[in-house]
Length: 156
Image (cartoon, rainbow, N blue to C red; front, side, top):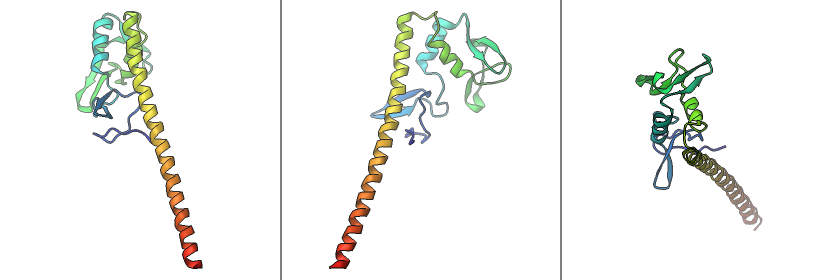
């Protein structure tokens, strides 16, 4: 399957990446940290989840508040487990979209934005796959035409 690539960093765009748009192109919000939380996600976590545990580390089996997590600027990682340095970004994101502290309307709107972005990436990949199939079919048809032309020219 052909993956949609960010035109800035040329890395594949995943459905779990934070995205932005430049003209009609999908780009990483931050190419150095494509899966990092978006500014909107950070604001929501700070506003509604500051006072409770919002990230769980499967490796340690512990839960943490967002302000307890570590950052490592040298490796472009934020939201690391303070015990084992596992990246807990996805845990924070999952919490955000299920947290009862967020008003239901905000939670639904946040999920809708995330779902639309996922569908956009998937459909972009599907369109690219379909275009690749059509290009291969066109190349095969051109090759068949050339073969037919050669047979006709050599037969006279």
